[in-house]
Image (cartoon, rainbow over all chains, first blue to last red):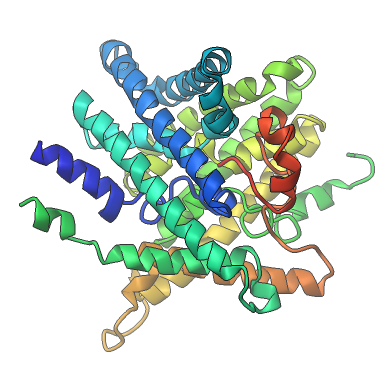
Length: 196
Length: 238
């Protein structure tokens, strides 16, 4: 249990996907303008991340590793994730209408999101077990959500600021992201300290 | 399009006017993550360029065969094949670079520069023009990530490609090779690029419009929110 807590909090605080690993920057910069869209996007990302891990891990172990086909990982994973996302979208659209309305529109955008494929490869490179991988994916997703939320707040405040002309738009957004990232540096060592 | 624009223009547009990193805002993730060291950036730049040229050529050669409805999955498979090839080559001949790039090497497959170029250019233009576009965009990407890594490595570690530049008496500002430095340098570089572009009368960089978004074709925001969101630079795929 302690180990799972360490994995989750590492994913959220010290190795935050967006602010420390730079995965999922595009939605982070693109969709974080409104709190509402930020929430929908993050929920969809958490969902797809856990689902992608749940499906790709057995495929990797039972097929690719067993028959020494590891070189096919990139192709197989991206295809499985893309197909999975499509499938989920169709199922939601058909059976769970309200959920489709709040999450569905973000799903196609997530297929080519590097955060989802990134978490799958990260789990592999850390050689996590199945449960550990699932927990890590969940933690990474929550970390993404936290970053999105915080940043949506920061951007809301920036709207009324007097910003030099050539800094307007993305440059100032990136510098604000840099400052948010500095605050996350402060969490270094915290997780190890708490759960020692 | 190939007639109205010369090949030279296709090649050079990737450097400044349509620089993928600074102007089109594509491929942000590897740019930020890898630009801590010059050698890693060079490796990343070359890998992306190879994948970009290869996938552009194949996609434009197959553009009349691939049905429009399944073009995105088809593009992704072609790109993934090239990424696998590059990954194997790097693992075999430059294991040090492979270690440095880590998970970001396989992640080239979801780098939006490549899918973005496939969707915006290779799927509509001739093989030769697409190849040249790939070379230009690849060089533009490499130039941007290399410039960024030079700034970050020099200020953050006092070295360039591992060679010490600053004397030991100057303490390097480690913040530049930490994640915040990446965002900061990228922001400043984009501001500089904006300034130059403004002087030349080009529009500002930004996530503006859906034209550059590789997922625009399957975007379901189309119906209601898209006009609102995308006009303000709302939604882009990664």
